[in-house]
Image 1 (cartoon, rainbow, N blue to C red):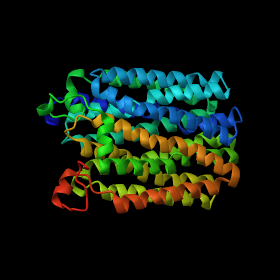
Image 2: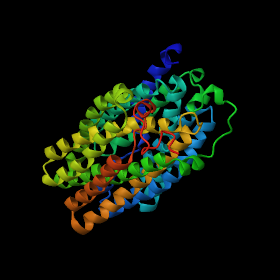
Image 3: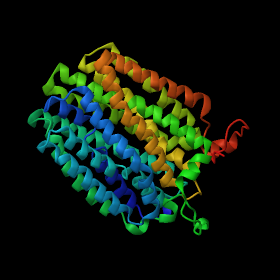
Image 4: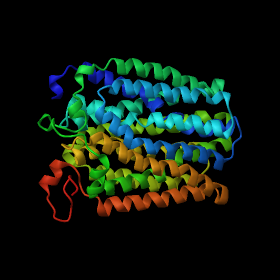
Length: 417
């Protein structure tokens, strides 16, 4: 199917992933630096505002997936969401109250909930299921390259002009993202295929996503693993940013950018490897490697406060998050193929791991205030170790090809029933 379409939508989708990389997550770790450096917020307050925004956003994930399943205006949804995320962040330099910061970041997180299912749906609608794995690897490659590029710019410009510059950089990248999505031809997207249907299933009614989730044991187990992964992972970089701020406030943003760039540069080959080999090797070997890295990273952060050590340890995030980011939509596609419930399921699982990510900064902030940064890192590492053991012992291989090659009565089929 991929060879029957012109290459223009693929090139446009590449650039959309590149420019949208910095927009889709809002300010991310820069928010913690900004609130700490400019407004002198306490770590617990920073963690609370990030948690409030995240918890609110996760409520929108499943409806966002259902919206993407139903609407043929997927490109317009991306444009509107990008404008809302950027607009919400551009308000921050003009307010410092807890309430208004929480409101703006909640709006940003709500709008950002549509990006993952929208990009996945557009990709699946262009390539079809057989070429989707390679396309996801390409998406993640450009996404990580875009993150590295924007982090380099943010670090250099923040060193010269202060932390506030990241707000205006986001505005420029939003304009570039809107141009890129406008270059994806609407006719290149098969909206039936984009929701996980084949053309033989055209008469199928629109699905109720929760019914699928509640009866698909493998999908539910994968959701728990994802939630634990992000509960352990989400707070690590913001904690590193706060430690760097204590060492040298002026260098905090540039060094955080260095952490991001280091991780993103490692994520690029990881995403390429997943896209190229996940069909032949299966999903689980990659998933185990990604989950194993996380507890190791959390423990290593406690060894030293040296900025170069912290940036070096952050390289491991490139392996874990790079593998997870590329595999996540592929595994959801495996478990929902032919159901017409791909995007609503993607949104629902994003909500589940979003809960973990939303709770992570609040949990870490409380541990920091009571026991210090090292205790927080070790707490997160312990959660990550539990997630790894769950993947190792309980999660089956989801690749239809690998599952059919090695059937086992003890493992559910990719349908998960």
